Length: 155
Image (cartoon, rainbow, N blue to C red; front, side, top):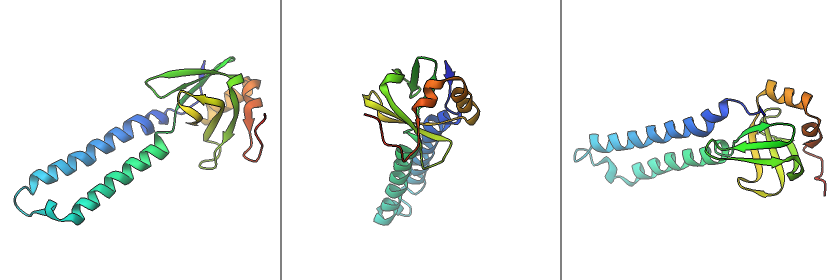
């Protein structure tokens, strides 16, 4: 089994959201303690709206960009997909195709499953360039699954 996804995946999926959420919530808590009974800053609805917008936009950014990335390992029979808590394996027959995303060409790929899996039907991963090229060179089944964006899925 060979890892295909970049080591940056764990930073983007686990570390960054944890650090961001802890920092933002700590700042809000400390700010509330610092101005308690003095300035009435939290009585101003504009402050609350601003804090909710900062918190909401950060959570949305994390959910739609980083939380979608999975760790992917590949061997000659299976593709292993992990969210760092659970790992599921899929046979190559379960995979409709692997497509290069439009977001960051050559780095972010999407595995399209024929049926919905445990993490959904579309599984995104941030590929390590060197490891991805090694897998493509050594595994013809993965090369056969690689599709271009304008290719139509096979039935």
